[in-house]
Structures are given as C-alpha cells and as structure tokens.
Length: 65
Image (cartoon, rainbow, N blue to C red; front, side, top):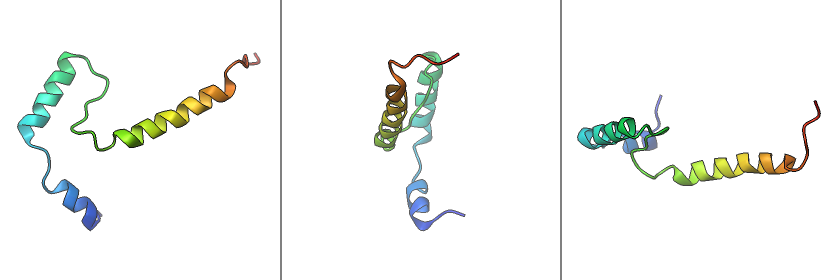
C-alpha cells in the first residue's frame, strides 16, 4: 500500500529513454550502481559515514585471532 506522497513522486516517473540510456551506460562502463537522479545522495552519504565510523572505531586495534 503506497501513501499519497509516494504516489505523487512515482506517478510522473522517469522518461523511459533516459532510464534506458543510464542503464546502457552503466552496463557498458561496468558501474556497480545506476541512479536515475541525485535525490537519495544525501541519505547514501550519511549511511556511508556511519559505516566509516564503525571502521574508525576499530582502527589501530588488531583483531584477536
């Protein structure tokens, strides 16, 4: 079940030729991810910053084996 807000975002969609162009370029360049716009870039950056903090927490501490 989608919310009214989600429907407003989804209904206009992305122009199919543009999406196809992005996919073609992604395949040709062997890109790990294909994005249709930059809308979620701040959320991705925040998530990666949190992941980096996890690594930084253990930096300099060799794992006990």
